[in-house]
Length: 129
Image 1: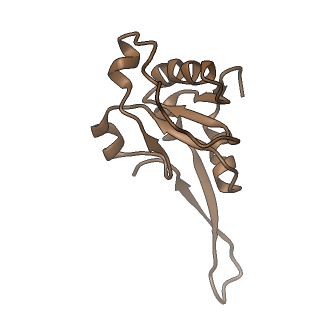
Image 2 (image 1 turned 45 degrees about the horizontal axis):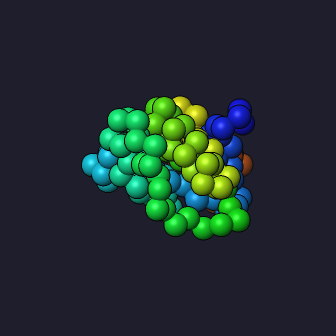
């Protein structure tokens, strides 16, 4: 984790452990509808953030006591969103690399093979696909 950012693997591990975290996806609605991180909240703030609107993240009511992770396509807009949320008192981080980085996060699962002496590991892509 770098200052203001969280890496995709770290976020994935937090979610797998069931840790409380609020994920705020700031991409356009059509991008969110196509693909999103499970349990994320959508706030269509992309255009406002890119236009330099300092109030793009105002008025949100997010759960207290849990970190907030903002997400966009590549991490630039979400970094601005996280900064705005920090100014409002939230413990906010931006997903470094955005959904592009999320698409590269893989996890494994053991696949049982009854009666076999082999062990199979299934690779699962956490992202889209």
